Length: 255
Image (tube, rainbow, N blue to C red; front, top):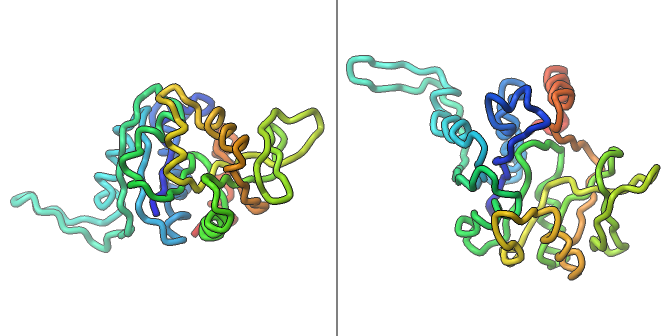
C-alpha cells in the first residue's frame, strides 16, 4: 500500500519559516516534519510514498536525492570522485516526488497522482501534522466497513469545523462548530479506494469540501476515532511546542 502526502501548499501562516522552505521541510529535532510523518507510516510497514509537491518543490526533491549524503558520514576521494558512505542511515523507502503544480488545490493534487496509485487502496495525509495513530488499525477498520473512504476523526481542540458521526461510524455531515460545542474533526489521515479520485474534477477542487461532502452524503465515508496524540503544525507556536516535546523526550508520535 502507498502513502500519499500532500506537501505542496504555501504554508502562509508559518511565513517566518516558509519564506525559505516548504512547510513539510520545517525541522523538528533536526529532521523535516515530513520525515517524521513517513517514519510513522514505515513503522506500520508502509514504505512506498508519493509526495505531492508544489511550492518550493526543489527543496523536497533535493533532500531526498541527497538523503544518503546528508544523513551519513562520508569519505570523498577527490582524485576519482568516489564517495564512500560510512555508517549510512538506511530507510527502506521508495519515494516518488511529483510536481502537482504551484496553485493546485488539495483535491487537484490527489487527482494528479492518480497514475501512481495503480488502482489500489492507498493512504493520504498532509505534510504538516503528527499523531501517534495506529495506521494498521485504521487500515483494518477501512477494510472491515468496506466503503470508499475512511478519515481519522480526532477530538476538536476548539478552532475547527466539526463532523457528525453516526452510531455506525458513518460520517453524516460537515459543519462549522457552533458556539461552545465540542465534537470530532477531520484529523487528516485517510484510507481511500481509487474510485474516490473520480469524484475530483480538477486542479481547483478542494478535497476537504465537495469530494468529502459527496462521500458523506452517499454513505461512503466512515470515521476512525483517534483519541490519542494529534497536533497540526499551523503556527510558529505549534512548531515550538513540537520541538519542546521532541527535546524533552515526550514526542508521542516518535517511532
